[in-house]
Length: 201
Image (cartoon, rainbow, N blue to C red; front, top):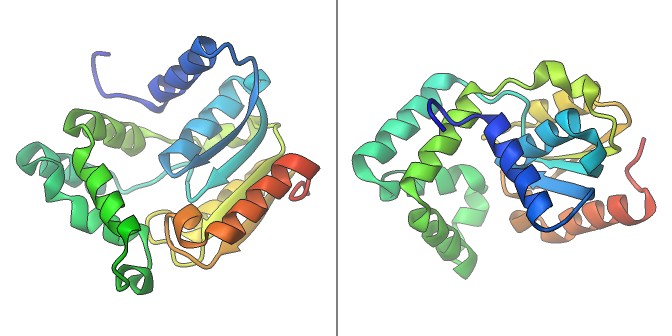
C-alpha cells in the first residue's frame, strides 16, 4: 500500500489468511510482532479470536529512532547488517555463549528475510500505538514475558495484563524468544491455557 505499512495492514493480512483457510474463529498465539497483530485482531475483529496468547510483546514499542536506525541499516547494508545485533537481543548472554544449531538457524532465517518486508514491518512497529484499544479486548488472554527480555521488557507485558480484562501474566526465565529459550515452560503455559482454562484469572 502507499505510505508506511501499518499494524492495521498486518491485521488485515491476518484476516485475509483466515478467509483463505476458511477459518471463522481461532485461538491466536503471537510472539513479538505476532502478538501485536493478535492485539489488533482481538480489539478490531473480536469475533475471530477465541483465546489470545501475547508473548514478549508490547502495545507500543519505541523509541521511533531505534526503528528508523534499523531501517536505515538494512537499506544500506541489507539484512546481514543487523543480524548479529538483533539475534543478541533475542537471547540471554548465557544462551548465546553455547553454540547451537538453533542459533545458527535463527541467524540464517533472519539473513534470508526479505529486506523490503523487514523494513515495512519495522515501520508498522515504529508507528504502532495500541494502548488505548486494549480495553476492547474481551478474549481470555494469557500474557507471557521474559524476565531478561530487553526488546520488550516485563513492564510491557505487565502493562498489557493490567489493561486487558481477565488477563493472566507470567514471566519465564528467558529473554525475547521465550518459546525457544524456555520451551518446556512456554509450552506448558500455552497448552494449559488453551485446553483447560488454566491461566484465566
